[in-house]
Image 1 (cartoon, protein in one colour):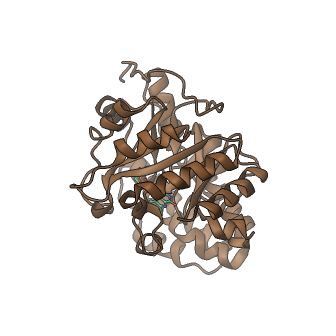
Image 2 (image 1 turned 120 degrees about the vertical axis):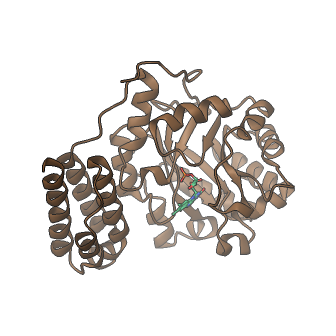
Length: 342
Ligand SMILES: Cc1cc2nc3c(=O)[nH]c(=O)nc-3n(C[C@H](O)[C@H](O)[C@H](O)COP(=O)(O)O)c2cc1C
């Protein structure tokens, strides 16, 4: 058991918002809905961020956009906005804050063709003047901290994150998060944590490092390489909403927290499943929850060092009713518990 206490320089302060710790759950479209964020927050994530929400749609009170921006029950509710029109983004920020958001985050990192094609997300890394106008309009619109999430740049020959972060700070942004990849990399290769250090050098607002934090030791290595003030976890929390909390505990104490027991993991999976059905309704919820069930079974298999039971995982992920899905899930956990004990 390691007891060396890795240092995080000081408590994270985002404008006037002070999270309990410096380990944040990343926004993930189609994944970090309210059901997921509530569990991640309760199990110890310092802050959780909504899926990206299209500004114009939130400003027009579109139902799906409102659902994505839901945050009731969260201590610190962060809504991430996407778009490229300063007026819509400002209006969406007002709507989000009016509905309880404590922080508004702006997406300047999404590489998806649909978002980039509309010139939002990481396309803004090629249009810094527009990116800065978006930040200025959003900061002016709300009395809540505005933060920016970006990639390093569009490609290796245009690493703009330090400049964008500096200009964001000058416009009043309260924090920046940097995913240590370029847009051209999509999710390929390895995130470059040391490249984030140049952003930290360029600004005095907090910098959050993001990309490929999937194990406790990654957190210490990422902080050492980037000198960042905080870390953000995305895919490493899929099927493991407790993982950001575990990383926070590790960074605080230097002691490796035990993995939750399979019984605890199953209870969280069921709570998450019920939360999804409540959010989306039964039919949409059953379909939406499938990927999560697969991830939960993979996480349980990893905990006990076994392969995931493929047939049961397939049953859980193709079930057409909650009863059948939860029954397959139950059999998957029992099989893993039995194999681990054998
Ligand atoms: C399924 C999925 C959806 C994502 N959606 C968003 C999003 O809505 N907004 C955003 O800023 N980043 C989004 N991201 C990027 C993550 O927030 C994060 O920057 C990236 O996954 C790298 O971190 P990780 O290696 O810890 O996953 C998404 C990533 C994934 C895998």
